[in-house]
Length: 571
Ligand code: DGT
Ligand code: CA
Image (tube, rainbow, N blue to C red; front, side, top):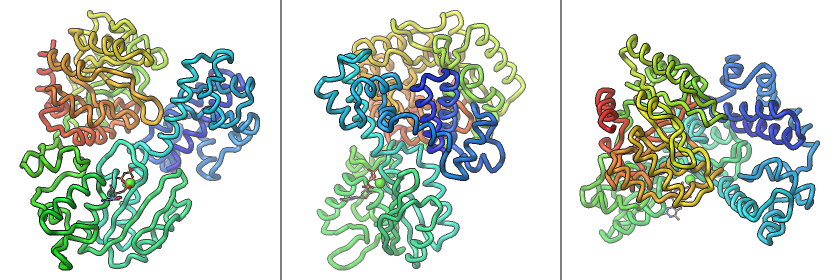
C-alpha cells in the first residue's frame, strides 16, 4: 500500500512550505490531505483505479493528480524540487516529534546543525538553550523526541501494517501451493506494535511457495532466501519472515513462531518437567515424535487447554490455564456497537446517515455519534445551536429507522481547570458524554489526575476518552495516577475508553486489565473520522482480549436497550 508513502510526501511538502514561510492555507491543505490519506483503511491505489480520489476529504483535483503521479512514477516531481530548496538536514529534523519548522529553522540557521546525532549531542551538552525561542524545556523535549523517533522507526503500529499483511495471506493462500497458512509472531498476538510480520505455511512444495513469495509486487529486497525461511523487505521498510514447514509440524511451528518468547520458554519448561521435548518440529519423547500437527496437541501434551494467541505473553496465562481459570474472552460477536464516531458536525468526513449505513454493513446495532466541543477549534468543535440541530436530526433518524440506532453524544474537552467545555444544560440533553483532554499535555501527574478526576466526578460524564493521550511513535502518554482514576470510576460507575484508533489504543492492554481489576467497565470507541475507520473496532476488541477482558467488562456488548438503561442510571 502506498498510503503511508503518499501521506509522508504531503507532510513533507507542508513542512517545507512552512519553513519557506508560504501561505498557512497551503500548508494546512497539505497537512489535511496527509491526514486523510493516512486515515484511509483502503489501499489508495484501488481508490485511484475507481477514479474516486476526489471523494477523499481534503483531496481536490490537483492533489488527486499528484497522488496519481506517485502511484505511476513512484515519486512526486514537485516534492523532489522543493526538497532541493532547503538543506537535507533540516528536512530530517522535522521528523522529530515535537520539533516544528520554526525550531528546525533556528537550529539550522544559528548553529548550522545538519544531522540528528549532532543535534542530540548539542542538546545533551545544553548548547541549544541560548538560541532564540529555545528554553531548557525545549532541549529536553528535543532529546525525548529523538528517542521516540528511534523507537517509532523500529516498530510499526499494528493497524498501519495489518491490511497489507492480511492481503498477503489472502494472495498466498489463493495463488501459491499452500495447505495451511497463518500469521504468526506479534501480529497473531495482536500486539499494538510489531517489529516485523511473521508468516507460517505448510506445503509439500516449499520452493514454489518461496519463489512465488519473492516475486510479490510489494517486495523491494530479498534479505534471506531458502526453502524453509525467506525474509523480504517491502518498499515501506517492513520485513516479512515466511517459514514453510511440513504439515506434521504445522501446529508445533505455529506455537513456536507465535510466541511470545517468554510464553514459549514456559511451555518448554513444562514439557521438560514431564520428560518431553517441544520444539518447532513437534512433541518428542526421546527420539519419538508424539504429535505437533495442531496447536491443541501441543497444549494438551503439557496438560493445558488451548490458550488464545492474545494471551501468550507470560502474563499469568499459563498458571490460569493450569488452574482452569482462563478468562472467557470477549469475542467479535459480542460487540454490538461503537461508542465514539465523529460526523460532519465536527471534523468527521461523513454524514449521520453514512455512519448508520456503515454500522448496518458491519452488523452493529447502535453507534454513538460524538463530535468535538467548541474550544477545539482545529477540529471545528460544535457550537450549541448546531448541537441542538444534531440532537433533533438523530431523533428523527431513530424514528424512521429501526435496524441501526444512533445515540447523540459529544467528545467534550476537559479545560485546564478541570471544567467541561459545554454547560450542564446542554450536556444533560445528550445520550452520552465522553470527556477528553486535548490541551495541556505537558502538565504534571498531580494536575493531570486532578483534571481527570473532576471530569469523572462530573454528574453528566459517562466515559473518559483516551485516558493517557499517547500516540504510538509520536507522543508519550501524559502522566496520570491510573489507580486513583480507576478507584474514582469504580465509585462513580464511570467508564474508561479503549480508544481503538490504531495510533492510540488507549487505554492499552495492560492498563485495561488493571482497570477491570478495579471493577471499572471499559468502552471501545474507534474515534473514527471517516466511516472506514470504524473497522478499527477490531483493534479495540483485540486490545480488550489482550487485557483479559470478558463480555461483562465491556460496554459495547450491551444491546441498545441495556445501553440506554445503563447510561440513564449513571446520572
Ligand atoms: P516482534 O517481532 O518484536 O514484534 O515480536 P515477535 O514476538 O513477533 O518476535 P520475533 O519476530 O522476534 O519472533 C517470532 C516468534 O518466534 C516469537 O514470538 C517467539 C519465537 N522466537 C523467536 N526467538 C526465539 C527464541 O530465542 N526462543 C524461543 N523460544 N522462541 C523464539
Ligand atoms: Ca515478529
